[in-house]
Length: 142
Image (cartoon, rainbow, N blue to C red):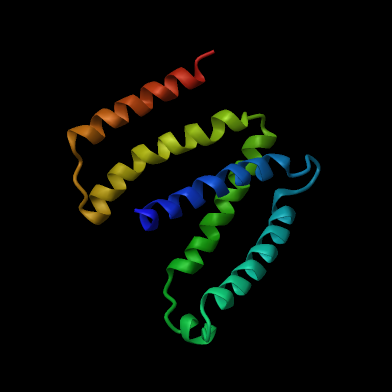
């Protein structure tokens, strides 16, 4: 059970601090300049953790297994980061921006799961989409 739960707990914990940090990027600082520091720190942390968690690890052997995904993921992550920073600079509340994004994403991923991975679209998922959309309405209602 722990092996199933801890990764999502780490995502939730990290996402809380991610949102706080994205909102705290200095107003006058260009988000892309901010991300150069972010990714430098992330690269160093990843390198250190790779060797801490993989005694006798061989990074070159790992790189030999690479495909397109890490390259596209790097571009996509920049889009996520810049999108959130600009959303907060535009005035989105931290309590709403992520919820709206996550709700829209959840609806889209139901169809992505169906089209790309042959996951079923069940009645529970359809009702879940309706609940998500109702929640979006309520959250954005003034």
